[in-house]
Length: 173
Image (cartoon, rainbow, N blue to C red; front, side, top):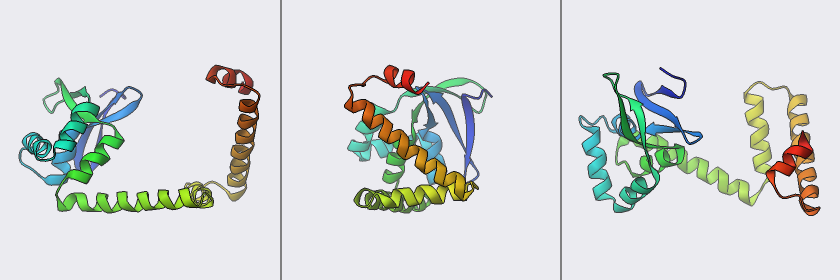
């Protein structure tokens, strides 16, 4: 299987994905199958889209048909969504299997709102993530300082009229 088309495993279920327009897109039928244990996930998705017109309109507008391998090894175009689209779909699935994801999405949403109200929380979360990844404290501190310095430099350039990405690229080379 090519690196731009791969399987990911979710609760021991295989989810097809493909690299499309600079991001991963996941098979929505595979997501439904994993969340509902439906015998006919294609039909389930079709009924879900009819029942929830807003979801149906959203998926029809935002989710492209992307070529992916079938179980028989043939390439077929399937309805696929990026991470945002998958989260939107999960919110609409009335299944106990989807509940842990819905709770997680609610928690992440709450954390994000808290960070908007108090930006220092975002910086603390960044430190925790880097620490959990095993980076040493001095590296984390240097990283945070370099981000602040780069932001100040970018602000200065904007004040002096630098606007295009090409100009920023030349100045940072």
